[in-house]
Length: 94
Image 1 (cartoon, one colour):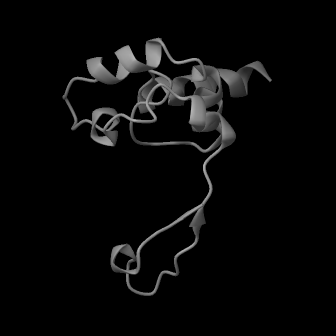
Image 2: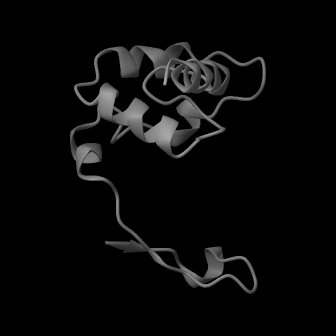
Image 3: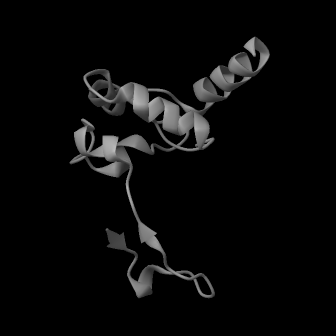
């Protein structure tokens, strides 16, 4: 379990333990630089998508991103716009 250092905490916000989902231990990105997955608008996500393409837990990652409504970054090789579309389609299919 990892706890955020006190000098990384925003004033008035208490730290809490970070407990990653069990599937993250098998993620292809576990040792990659997180910046690869959070590119600036208009930047290339090719490196992130390449890592995600060979990931054994990409389905779990996508499920998490959709359930958590992740609005930033590449998750399971998808952009926020792609996930938003998936969520809308899933909502209309129900």
